[in-house]
Length: 572
Image (cartoon, rainbow, N blue to C red; front, side):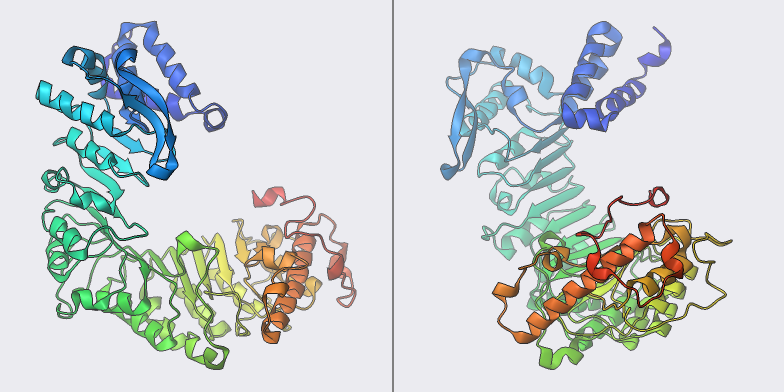
């Protein structure tokens, strides 16, 4: 045996690669990698211990530990979801220290418990037996445990915290665990604490805040809410790198003066189920010059342009321009099928974001991912698009769209705005923007490649273009424009909520408003024409380039946006 195999770290890496080397095989046969590692462990003594460490390191259920007990002390029972138990192992008689010996041997190797409510779950008798074991032996059942993750679990699972010790650095569980006494002793050593909000609040702001006051070395904190005292406390921790809040109540920190929260090393700040006003008031409390690299504001409450302008300005005032790389302000990502409600049509102009509102964001030259969803879209033109492209030359993902699809605003941007992103944003892979493709545009000759040819400065990346609900009349003219701009790397085109426009019945039966019905019908017409553009761009036959623009056959386009033959090899 070569002496290199005596290095534990090297063996661990080898076995870890075996576990995840063939993703397709693991998908079809989830335990194939584990079986391979087990076979290697049996080939020689050198492989045995590191292989066991890898096999037991990550556990998604407690069943594997409990099944190490003699079969006479446990049974597998079918559960009853009505009473909060989906079934699993149940302890049927007292377990002696001797009977725990084998289970304890393997439990020492466990580092991560990722317990899933969807899997078979032990009932409370198992937790009581575990506690009894620790009382009898005077030792922790999982002395090397580092992470505990429980997403949606029944009450009782929080008791697993009693079996963990000073090695635990990450806890992710529903918010009701703040009421268990086993969490408090861990607060001084935790690096990551995630309290998942529940549909029906089981805790108060005071309870969550009281727990957070015990944190001293936390790096990432996600909680439903915090009061002013707890917020002041965590803002002074130099260890805090990420703060994630489910809050929309401005009064929670009304007593904190502007610029009073230091957050010296905060890199990620994210608000979920929040409002634009809350985010703006929170950012006002930050000291200027914060090194934030990722900022997210998720909301379903429409905000007028004045509120958006204040938020953008505050971001520009509080965040170091050279650090911000990811900015998301828009719909809940967890609720993609239920976007922000549309603002009243009579007040649509009050919700349109203009160039002046955008200007404070243009200083963030290192931006790589920018998503701005506004209630009614944007009202700036092609010149502003040029300014945006020049400002964000490192951008890879850009989305400037309406937070709702049921609106009647005609975008000011034309197809001609795309050349700015084509020239200045050389790393751009995904672009979502509303365009007016119904007007005639002429690509500047200095930027255009010969039709159908890649050109000297060809676009080297396959780009995805989401046009939302963009008006378009005439597929050939638009296809020519895109082909001359991008060459054979012409973008993949999609529309927002395609299922609505592809359904012959769609939402018609649900809508009584004539304007909404007209919008639905227009959107379906746009969908057909954009589909035709896709088919022309993907077609190997380029004879249409010389065809008359009046000879359109949009209605004969396919049933989807992808074309019969899918994407060309150039797009892969």
